[in-house]
Image 1 (cartoon, rainbow, N blue to C red):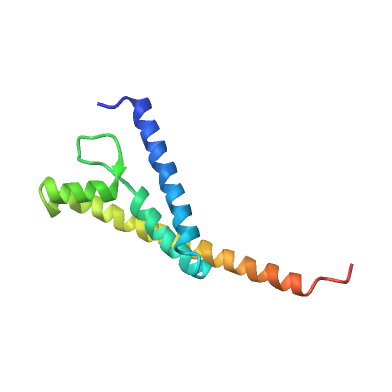
Image 2: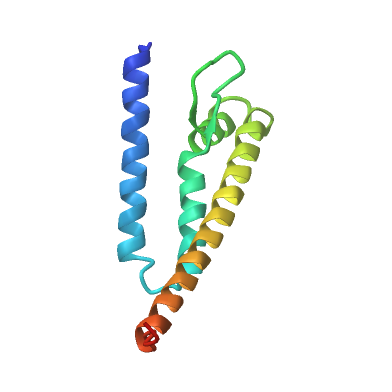
Length: 125
C-alpha cells in the first residue's frame, strides 16, 4: 500500500511528465496547426491523460480515468463498472478541449494584434 507521501510524489511525477509530453507534442507534432486547433487537440489529450476517477467505490485515492475505465472494462466487470470513469473521462476531455479552443483563439487574436501594431506603430506620441 502506498503512503500519502509516495502517493503524492507519484501523482506529481505523473502530472509533470504529462505536461512535458504535451509540450513536446505541441512543439513537434502540432506546430503546423493554427493556435485554435492546436489548443483543441492539446486540450483533448490533456483531458484524456489527467482526468481523475476513483478505481472503485471503496477506494479513496484517485487514478487517471483513462486507466481506471480501461482496466474496469477489461478486467473488472465490463461496461457496468467502467461507465462512471468513462463518463468522467468524456466530461474532462470536453472541458479541456473547450478551454484549449478558447485559449488558442485568445493567443491567435493576441498574435494578430501584436503583428498589426508592429506594422503600423503609433506615431502620435
